[in-house]
Length: 419
Image 1 (spheres, rainbow, N blue to C red):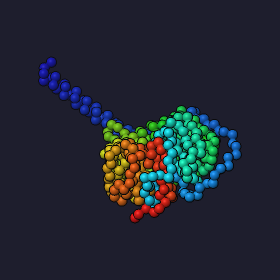
Image 2: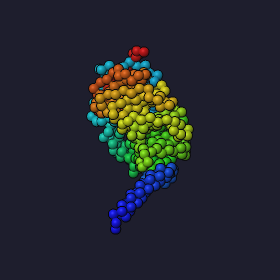
Image 3: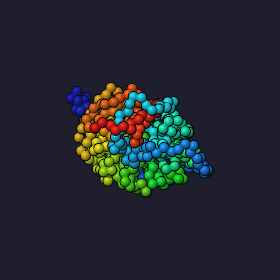
Image 4: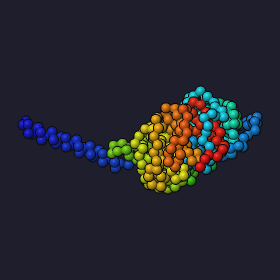
């Protein structure tokens, strides 16, 4: 075979490889991903209930100092991670009380009626007196609990990596029912109108009756769910590791819209961050740092922005701004209407968890164990302490409850903050 013929054949082979790659990319770009369906079989789900007994009488008066509850991760049905109307002073360096929890708290506590509830990573749920930090009761889960417990009236709903969703009585921690399945639950539950919503790592979104523990409906999206569902009006919305963001009817599980987002021609995005919302728009961020704003009614993309680094934390939403931290050590504020960057602040460290907006300040923590507060108007750092690691915590009318890695601390914020 002549050298010229060999060159021609080699060139044709290379061209075929290029064409095949282009065809593959085109196929990946144009093919439809699964839209999922309601799971009507539910073959791996069991629910056990405990015999009802009278609730123990409280041995202490219920605090009315902070009447507004922080009932679930994010503080609201829309998971906004904000209390824009609070006017607390920045917390001093000395807390009112601290409690060494003896384990990692990846997600912040929840609060209502003078009590705090927190999940610890290695499978414990702890109830504490918010006034004193005294432990009221502790219960163990079937596996890791990298989530926040959800308050559902007189009940506390806890998900676990052991494949369980459990309802405890808030007064004494008595187990009322437990749902078991083959899939792990990393998602933080949320409750509205007697139904708790939670996602499983096998791609199923559960709607569970809070009284009985029985599923109202289950939607199988496919792909892993590590995020927490958000409630936006009549819909519940979720993100997945397979690149999907979707909303479903709360009452029936009927799909309203489901969209997949691409990283490039060959790969889909993946979402660890939950969706948050200002009710008109849905905000989330992919692990690649792509920040998305979608129309809450249709799922249509309104704008996108980029952090330029790996990003895992759920966006906080407040005062027409969207706040996102990334592993490059940046905290960003984007305009909610069009995604325009308002400011960017850099710190020494990596921001893995979500931020927290309290009044005029946004709080965030780094993996290097430091917690910061920045002004929401310009991003200027105005307070910091050498503690913290993941989600910074929550706030009530008079106090901050900061989740400082393995330590829970209460700070007085009752004096009004300066303008």
